[in-house]
Length: 262
Ligand SMILES: Nc1ncnc2c1ncn2[C@@H]1O[C@H](COP(=O)(O)OP(=O)(O)OP(=O)(O)O)[C@@H](O)[C@H]1O
Image (cartoon, rainbow, N blue to C red):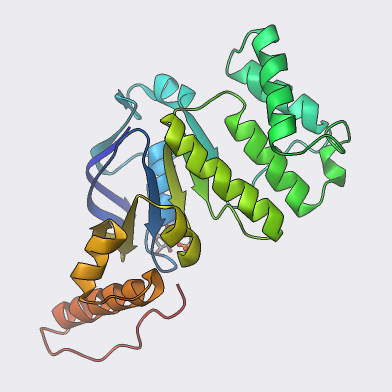
């Protein structure tokens, strides 16, 4: 479970996240959407303990990310949008390194690594140095590393960028399956098709505020629209942008061009 309670985060004068309250239970696949600069990465970094809230608190699996960081981080896997691999290790050595970091027993490590190699079809290149991998091979290896220690919380940022259709299908099936097993899956993406297809609930953040949160059906109600997630997202974010412009200009209601580039 992820609990974000009354969180504000500012960088100097810049408010990146405002008054965020969000509870994501175990077994839920939650999609986090928002225009560029809305506060998604800042929120993710606070869940992972890479940044701390200016006010408020974040708990992961019941542990406070700030005061019980080591315990919280044991439960988390984070796959950033620009994943990092140690170039001078083979894929297998990298998986072993992750198992060692999380303190898995040697026999368990061996079994888990073989399971990941099969799940992500890494057989053909897992014993080569990762510096020779293509983007797709790197992504698959990074996901194998994220899941090898069976995290309770999986956080992924733009997981499908640059993957071929077969790899995207595999990844979507794996994310759904992880949630089914009880893992909390937090997916940040600009791909509304993937959010619509996979998510149990969707949160939309805009200018650091959570302006919408619920099932696609409840978002449709909020937008008074029966369309797909793209139509609903655009309507909700455009309305929020108009409201914030109106409040800044004293209620005059200056027209906006909206947030077409999600
Ligand atoms: N280290 C930083 N110092 C100052 N401002 C920052 C810093 N990191 C982010 N910001 C600002 O905080 C706001 C939120 O940024 P964030 O990276 O969380 O957005 P995002 O939703 O992840 O955007 P994108 O979709 O473009 O990745 C932006 O206005 C950004 O410029």
